Length: 203
Image (tube, rainbow, N blue to C red; front, side, top):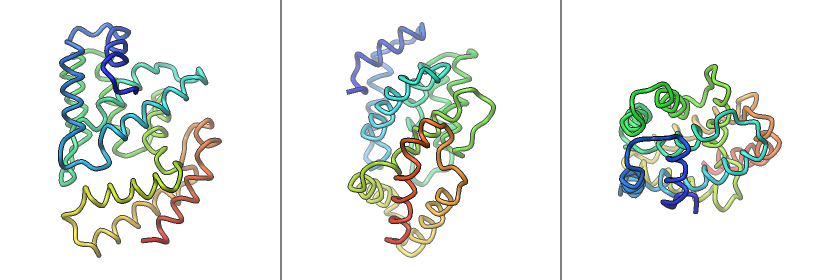
């Protein structure tokens, strides 16, 4: 598994980080196991890291290690009722990585998973596409994902939830391109759009 301690410690060494890798690995595992989570768990992180591992084969990602560490931290803080999850996750990454240029770039990458809109970074599209790859998974997994999201928002009344959820999914469907990299569009776009249409119809 990509979320095991050994791959994490290897990543830490490649980035020449001074903080204790084992301490941060344990802390992140605790974060992703919090009881308020159903989708934003180690399952999602593992899926993201596996897609990154596949994407690395293209040799088109400028700094794959920064994408990898950003993925580790991108949902480190997750409160379904909060509005600053990405900001707080980015802040945790800065705490772990140190106040330096690399850490600030990782924090910026994490923030992209809030808007799913790229900035000017060379690798921006990659972290966004990886985070949204769930839409292109087999329908069984996509339906599980939908159930998990509903579980995280169990506190929202059904009619309000369905209206807002349909609005969010329709927003993704109406994008000119759901995926920003040619690599992800080739692999994910058609299936993701079919899945989104099915989800919206089911809502």
